[in-house]
Length: 203
View 1: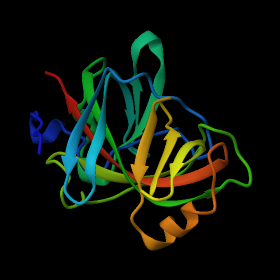
View 2: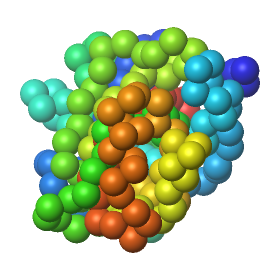
View 3: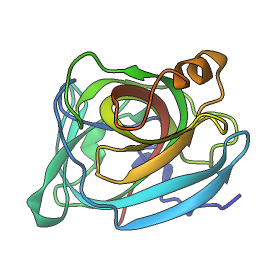
View 4: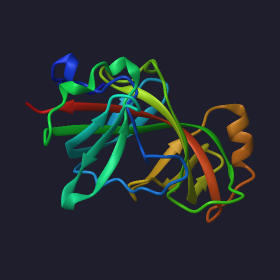
């Protein structure tokens, strides 16, 4: 398993940081990843890791909403879980390295409404999952998207994420595999999947 270097523990948003729109059902694209790599996760297999660089803009200690700014001034929100602690440790214009690792599909189906790129729901989990690299927290996110490809025999679905990057994720739960048989490429759909997150400050 590939290991990542880590900064001081107090600087890492590694307990399930939620990269998402400021409110549910609001389309918000992430910047284009600076790097795309793969890691091996026990029980899941190869997982794509998308790496972003952004600057810290501000943080609300009540809502724990952290605003980041990517290349060309594009901004998006990071919802930090309570386990992170005091957000005042981050400095204005500080550079952050954000690693996002989409994992297993936990639910899917045809969407009755909405448009591609909408965040329907997000939940930051308090703990990581077995086999995930050290320093990665996990969140569960539901988005509206269009299925690009479906392999019903392999139990995989390919779709476009919030950052415009097309990814293929695997389903292993019996109900999800059954639901996979009812959808086709080109369908407007809602998909829920687990996503590993790690954020480190460069100092």
